Each structure stands twice: as structure tokens, then as C-alpha cells.
Image (cartoon, rainbow, N blue to C red; front, side, top):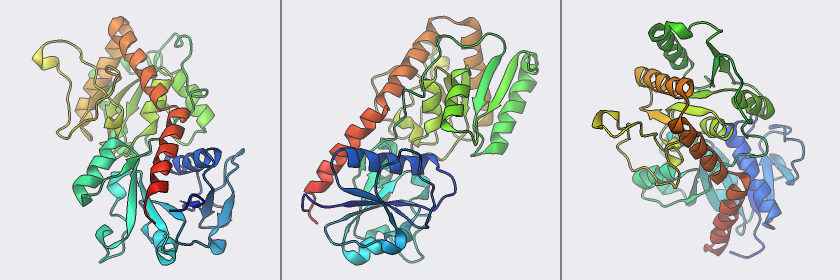
Length: 345
């Protein structure tokens, strides 16, 4: 592939900038600043609305012209958007941000094996899933978080414990977990003892502020490719508990409460990537509401009793968040594109 190749990043026509859409924009910005020619392509004029300060050149769909030297990057849930790249003979790359949607948008009768595409994965668990499903290897570019925005306070506020959650996925399950917890722990059934904070639909700045003032984050999302809310909660000094959604095991490590066998944390059946930090949360099987309640009770115990276990978990959360800073994501993106540059066209 010539050194002058241009990367075109497809942006789905979403009304709001989701986490996955934000990651696509971040990758485009990293490439632009790393001197890789790049353009973002909108399927509909004006959608999505690009954030203030976004400087990557924009090409509207009707003006898109690809050739065989270009890279055409498309998220996994928009297989039909591959068509311009396939017609032009461009290097088509599918960025799999959620393993659960890998097959969701393929036209009937079409297989990934039929298409001349390469894959990027948003996490090592997703890369493992792609390999198991398709026998294909993937480069990995993880999400990045702004550590200047998502950071802890010097100390959490006094008063009631604050539990943040985002019920965008599995709202009914989040409500069940809350109801179960209050039934089992009626002393926390009033706002004087515990406040539940819904962060759904908030701006990044609002989310960072709310998480920084929260003690615990309840993760109810699944399936996930590499979930950002628990990671942002760690960055803000909250202790996360709940579901990993499979992809969360990219960074989630379980807190080991004690040495007895009945206190060993739950671990999934599939291989979990190794990370250098100790336990950063209390993680339970996806959709197991009662297990999530028990995890929440454990987190409440940590906060009400303080002590070294809580301190270690919060420090591990900071180490985890640092590993997902935007600078780390930039290095991954530039390293991946250096490899893509060497691929045969």
C-alpha cells in the first residue's frame, strides 16, 4: 500500500454521539495528528453533529470517491456501508466495537468469509471472539478517556452513599437490582442513607461531575465490547460493581476479599487478559441480579468500613484509567495504522 493512502472513517447517522461513535472520531483525530491522511464520512448531511474543536476534514456520503489505495473503516453494525469500499477495491477494515453485533447487519445469505475485509477489535476479548467465530486475527484499538475530565476529587462528599448507574441497557434489570438491594438492606432505603444517581443522557462534563461525587458505580450493561462507564467511574474514584458484558474483561480485575475458598471472586469460563493492576471492582455474571446485589453490598461494606481493601481497589482503578488515557489510545491507533500501511493492497 502506498505511503500516501488516505483513510476514510464512516460515521453512522446517529442523532447523538454514542460511545462507539466517539471512539471512531477519536481514532480519526489520532490519525490526523499522527500525519496519516484521514477523512470522516457522514451518511447523512449534518448527522452526526461533530463536536466543537473537531478538525478532521469531513466528506459527505454523496461526494465520497474511494480508490484501491484507500482504507475504508466501517463499524461492525453497518455492513451495508462497506459497499463503496468494496466497489472501489479499497482496503476495507471493520472495526468491531461490540462482539454481539458482528453478524447483526449482514445481508441475508452473505458471510464475512465472502467479503475481502480485515478486522479491528475494540478489546482483546472481542479480538478473541472474532478469532473463535471467524478464525481471523485482529489488531486492537481500545477506547480512550480524557483524564483531565475524568478524575477523582480529593475526597468524596460526606453524607449518604451515592450509587451511580446508567440504565441505557437493561433498565428493568437495574431497577430489579435496586429493589432487591433495598429489600435486603432497608436501612439504605431512604435518601438520608443512599442516593441513586441516573447518569443516562448527561454530557461528558455532567457525567464526570456526578461520578466524582459518587462512591459506587453499578454496571448493568451487557453485551459490551469495552464498556466506558465503569472505566470512567474508576477514573473518578468510584468503586464499580456489576456486569462485564464480556468485553469489560479487557480491564476488569476482581477484588479478592480473602484467602478462604468461599471468598474467591467469580471468574468467567473464557480466557481473561492479564493486566498489571490488582482488583479494581466486584464483578459478577451478566444478568445475575442477585449476584449484583451481593456485589453492591460488598462495595457498601468497603465504603462504610474504609480500610486498606478499599484504598487498594481505588488505586487500582486509577492505574486502570491511566492505561486508557487518550495518549495510550493514540499510540495504539498509530501503531495499528503503521501495520495497515505495510499490508498488501
